[in-house]
Length: 612
Image (cartoon, rainbow, N blue to C red; front, side, top):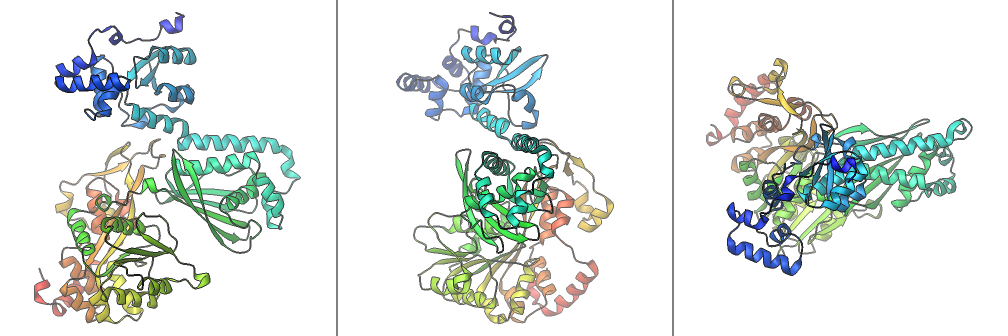
């Protein structure tokens, strides 16, 4: 054995003579009959005892790993905090070896490389990595599932993809050298109509690698959109992550036009057409799953701008119980969805999660005995068991014309992607009054203003009052990163803007994200929704029928116990899920003096039973 191998810490657990199965029985984890059954499965199908226990669902992978660590007197490594892993150390080992032996380097201590292994008894693996690393190692045991996830993150994480992009761009810039001063960029050539050159360049290896890495990085970074924006002599690439745009690595100057052409080719768009907007789709494969990418082009003064919307179905659960609503709100929503007819509207700006909420509602009501049809622009997610229609205004296939045809298709539930005009609203009301449940979206600031907007569009108050069941306003706020979460204090001015009384401040704890590698030093990771509910009960219908002012509708909702977006955001903040800056960034609060006036007016106009 060479000196490097001699320095390897081979755990003394290898010397133990106690069998793992007997250990599990002695600890009361397994019964004797269960052990016999597992050993029989092991003899028939092979593998280690732990694999047999997993096949028979007698133990989870984490339980097996923890028990094995105790049996072998080894350290059990938890992967709950990925920021603990030193990426530079992790990448000293080739990915092929890490995947072959299901192991990953997680750090360094006392001059030794810590290696987390799913099978610490694999002497061949220990010898192989010792020879490759040429450093002393310390073996710890970890869950195979968590190790595989970490391998994907280490070798294909967003920072790794960005580094590859930088190396690719740097290499291409070096190839160009001084020639950049003499040669016009492909982007400028493309603007002059040289489509053939752009198409030829789009097929070159560096361009293909750049686009592939760009899309891969977008998926790994959880980006919802990728913006490719030509400038005067450069190109800017930005990704929208958790609602905010972040600058990314742009392509080398001579590749810019070819990158645009490559994306258009993949999306089946006409690369020769640069004067008009175009829409297309493409699919990418990453981590053994397919992801849809919606592509939109827009001619600008410097060339075509491309925006790619990443539609990762694996990232959207479309589960009503996982939307983040409180128990009372969730009960109200499920009750509205159980109604045989009526209209439910989700309102909010673009990118506020309206489609996710509606798709979750469809999944909740989906049943083989129910005919569900949607009309959308565009169809973002394809749902099994549901008839989805894409509108095409260029051939007069609009929301209104689709709805007229859908009503002749014997529907039970109809989803309208967006209410855009009076005709669409009138058909939706007609559908609801004839026994159909209609779900749709609208663009207003809050729930009460949706009613005012519909009335201003010319809808009769009595029709709106009799057909509408529920209005939900929605926003998305960024969630504090769990890895770098720390206590925080609120400024006095922020407390005033949030209208937090002494009773709420008494035992309240506030948090913020310090910023770490896991969240890209933003302090936030992921987003969560906040909601405002307006339920159309008897009292609310009376006010709508009388065309009551929006302020009265809002105050009645508060008296009924339904808080606004600000109150919902404060609730999430008090739970330690988000920050005051996020809540104030997407909500607004009314002046207290105005509210007092509204209360005085409301006491005159609403029935006594609505007062508290």
